Length: 426
Image 1 (cartoon, helix red, strand yellow):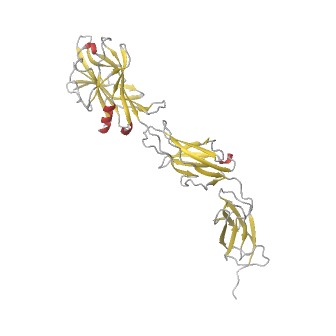
Image 2: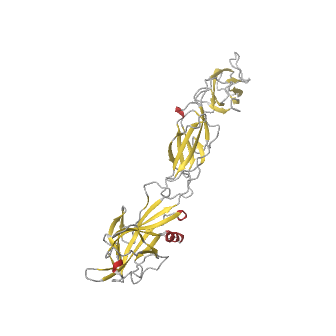
Image 3: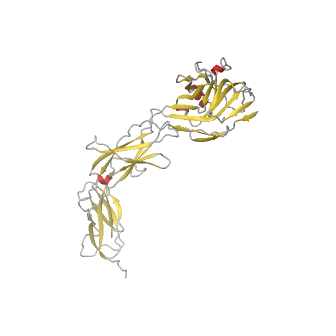
């Protein structure tokens, strides 16, 4: 077998070299649509000729492809068939809605003769020739003209052929283009195809799932009604799409609102976080918001459809610090005692209370501002008991302040004690 016309050309922005190294472009159309559309350009192109039955021309170096009968300048009769393949391995079989082969052609001899071209799926082309054509892998379908005259666009419905090829696990759909046998040797029916043959694929699209895993501050802090903040923070939502195509881009959308005016929704600045889960991230500009009760929700857009909005997640903006310092008392170390009590390194019991501030959640305490410990209140606006030992003798202070659930700190309470030194055994 002799191979002719091994060439190099540029198709749809890709350089294609020879039959065995052909590359295809599988790209979504730029325009948004109700369904995702893909244009698959040819990954293989060749034709055979009855005049040279043991030869095949791969990637012909010309602008058109002969189909059917014609005579050359020397009067030799030729009959041609074209073979084309499309890369389909990246298509989602479950989403397949439709597929059409598209081409353009012009008449060789007689524009008035009705067009008669067909497309038939065949087995993979592997060294085949006119004398040894590839076997059929499905029924032939008519190539329908899209316009009158000597030149016309052509379409053929290949949904069934593509569906069966995907079901068989094929990486390519192989198609034979020819004039049907009853007219194949009649030069009046001979045509030429412009060499861009493509497959237009339509996939169904389901909206993304409703976002899950709503979180505040960081992805590990789940949404809860008692979340309160006094500074800007981020919110998170996990994004999933039941039929996501590799080319689909999932985009998060977040809104928040004051629950006193739920009709006024404010869009957040958004992004997508990295990690094992695909999460959308939104930023809440707390510093610009008045104190109050707020809610937020999220949804996902896959370039064609939106998911449902998530359930709302609530938070409270509170930048107002507790107005009163906490109370402090201790039976072992009474405040401002004129007589030393207790002992160095001897623990005493200290009771802290919120002093009437209802949203106090914790207390900080320590001998100075640089070594404060934290203890939770027993309930909002409640109290806490700690065991603490002074580290030196004489008059000293225990600094205590309360913290509300948003992290605002109260004024300091300075609790002075008079500590007795260690006793010496005689």
